[in-house]
Length: 317
Image (cartoon, rainbow, N blue to C red; front, side, top):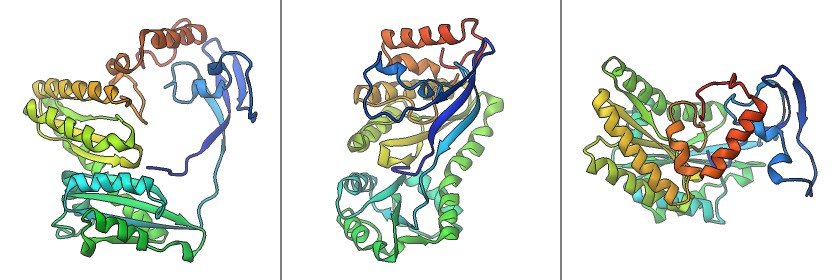
């Protein structure tokens, strides 16, 4: 999600491999020049370290207050390119202020359409953008700005859905999460044959998303691979591609396409993993993005905090 409310980790209690326990608290300083910048916030060493540096025993979170009012809009578009242009316009327009911009390509929209329990909804659409806006009161929830912006990019006005209130928003999120759930089910059918779902987690600067998706589709087409279902956090330039490999041979070809895509992504200033980390499955992609110097720095931290390699073996390295 773009701009979604997320918890802020204020403090951690962490157990290291040698058995010592450390209480770490984030500083509240506005200025600090003591030592190298990476050592200023030890809390950040462990957040996202995938269990390789220590075991988190306790966490203290600082939460933002819930907004008073939230409205969701499902905006269907006749063309994928125009839907992606709409995302950029929504991020940069002073007329709207989204906290969420989720993209569904045609295949993902078909899954969402089935989950919405209406097989005929938005039949003429080839893509969908789901947005959420927040407001302090009813006067701030005008949809005029969204409708005007959508008109510029070919939104299918007659099929716009409005989700107003907690129950409706829960339904919108159920429909959204039907896409990864459905793809997981499809991939599971082929595990016995050596296949599975292959999901990407790359991201690029949001203005480049349309051209990078086009290149990703071209790479799949050139390799004669069935196009991925593409959906996700377009407001962050962060879609998910879900491929289905039906056997071990197809899995190898899909992973070659993914590698070629990631090389292009990194060349565009992107990342190979925006939110789900590297783990074991994606660790081969780490050197595509990080230099030998960066990797050596990571290994030095690992050796210092876990010299015997006891913690989360196989993750990252």
